[in-house]
Image (tube, rainbow, N blue to C red):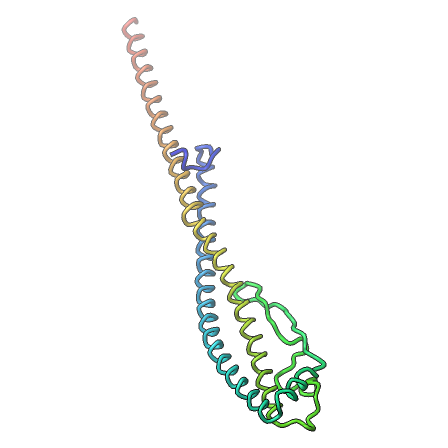
Length: 224
């Protein structure tokens, strides 16, 4: 039993009360962490489902963008289309910020200028003169693909962080459930056993002392 208890614990009632409070705190901590873990699992499941839906949507967007650029290449000419693509003078930079989900800090990826698809036509680097509307259509569709990919990346980053927090929380729950709380309980049982053993020894000692005193009293009366 001693191997399973906390080292250096004295078998006293005060120590028993102290360990009882520690066990209560550990159980409350385990319950709180378990609730957090359950919430993280629900959020992770939701994110996984949303990522699957987004992946299908992005696949469809990419197919439509590919068809649009094929048509633009046929109408405009592939050499001309390549020149137009090379003339882009400004590519919006990405901005990585963070937010909190279930108490977990997760990344948020956006365009640094908050630009939406189609808004930055003037930044594409070519004039609308001498180009067909199909070029704009292809550019717009690929801009939508870009924003969808950024949104997906944010979801993936959020899911990864939540997965890490899930694993960390699960380890803490398991440690409390299978190590800390059982060891506290075994230590408390050990203290109870030692206290009961001590009480039995004290009772036996008192009885023995009483017997000795009674025998001595009888002997003194006999002598008198």
